[in-house]
Length: 244
Image 1: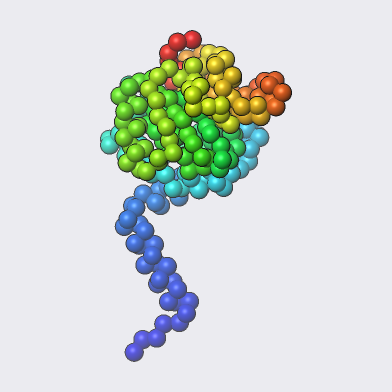
Image 2: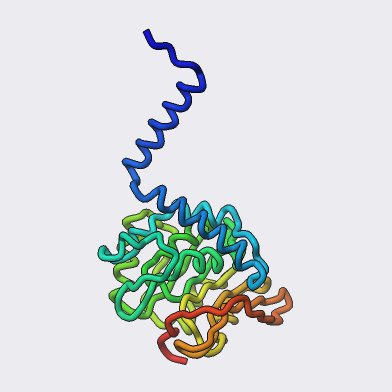
């Protein structure tokens, strides 16, 4: 009769659990690898961003949310690559590192209400939903908005409120907001979004000409209402569409 030592038994039990998890979610190891790559990129980009690490809560959300469920079926194999992917209608899902960085920059708190401009695939909204109380997200392209609504509902993100409309004007009835994330490049910071940001709140937005030089920009609104901005990193986003 074969008798297993304690360490050997623990090893086999752990292996069995890992095999079960992998069978239930074959993408889990790819998500883990993606998160480790994000950690490495954060260290390498620290001189530019001033952030050598990404908050562990943000990385845990990245490790949990199934990015492959938010991309078109013909892009599933590349879902966890660190690059943007097309989602149709001339739009993209941002590369994972940028999603992590933008999320980290707003310092999301569990009780926060956050506005996202540019729902796109719904992935950024899902990441935020793991971290804050309420997410309000706006998409101007109706087919994308409908698909994102469906995916977010399917994945159980009930704390995400969705709207089809022009994000330039924000969503006043859903605010005011502790933080705002804009996932498309604007030529200037939209004044309606600044107004809907709470005193002490923060907005992260790519600012620059379409398809030319853009900078990820942090907009801080002081408790006295004063607004300051700082550039973080050169980026390239699709343009913010709508009225402006």
